[in-house]
Length: 327
Image (cartoon, rainbow, N blue to C red; front, side, top):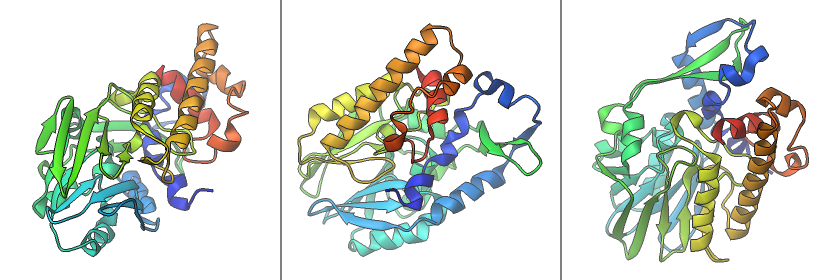
């Protein structure tokens, strides 16, 4: 059902999920290794192995998907407006795809949130003249260094780490907003809206109102368990609330772009929301009964959901722990 890129996309961001308080015995007995920049480079290379696919969503709106999730482009005489930017090694292919849409320059880059697979090529596009626009928390998170444990068994038996340096100045948003922002370009209205902490505390969605397209970033993982980032404010209740907000805007014809996974619609997002609610309710019940996450994992509380949702980025055991961390 999913391509290589769909299965892989976002896997690097599992880094936050398995804190020592959840792993417990799984961590004990293994030496801890210093954060490795080589692991991050390897993850970027694996993302970049995915093909870049192009799908027209409207007369002037195009989705690019593959090496790091989904990018949406509004193109026209006012220039190109690009939402998210793939991983760094994909830059030559991203540039080629953007150039293939026409000669107009990229005027604006919009980041849906701070994670590297959505912001890596900000600097290239800014150097070419684009303004990078995002929520103010995205600037904060990109300006910080992050040392994150990764569930990855290294050759020496260690749990390797993942290190993010602060993003270079040219990659940081030059323009930010606190709650909402509107752009008028190419006969289209782009409505940008921040949501309370959901996938992270930096998330926005972008509504292309005329084209009836909504880019949700990682507020939506289509047909797979999502990653929710507890280290930068992620909350499952916020993810549910974000889905509710988009469902209130969408109709049966709305094209809903997931951060990872195939192009979706209102029915797909409704199913995703139902899975989130079921997951939250089951884990809240186990947590209230005093069961730690490792015992909950052993009970397989999502066994009936796994056939649909457990074949993507996050497996069932990981999803149990993510929900525990983000209640």
